[in-house]
Length: 121
Image (cartoon, rainbow, N blue to C red; front, side, top):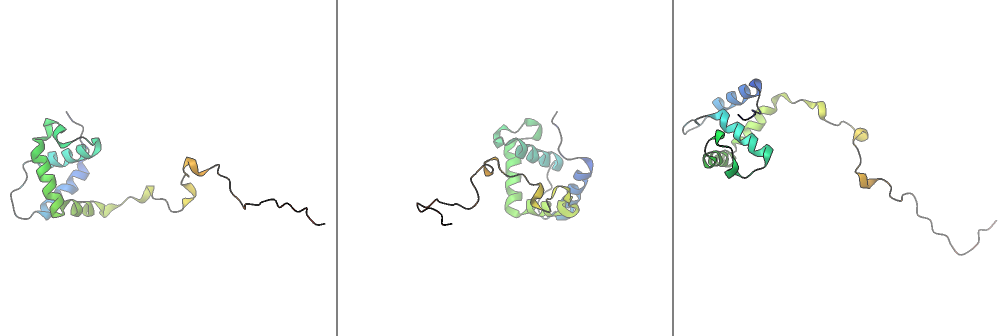
């Protein structure tokens, strides 16, 4: 049994988008299984051929993913899912952003060079 990525509320929104965005052609056999397969593939980074059999034939999943990519359906789905954006993790100012470890410890300040002449005074 594979762990599902979409909770009930998110799947409801995806399903609503799929109904509204439906164009010509036949409906997919199992839309949820397909979406979950793509999410699993993106999360794990494995080749398509290594998709678990619970998601169906890897070639069918890949072909459908490719068709959606070419038609812009993924872009439309992402825009539809962004209607309720949670800005909790956005950084308003950079005071809370950490600097890279190599950005500290460098020599800074004005570079002065000592001259060979003694100071007047």
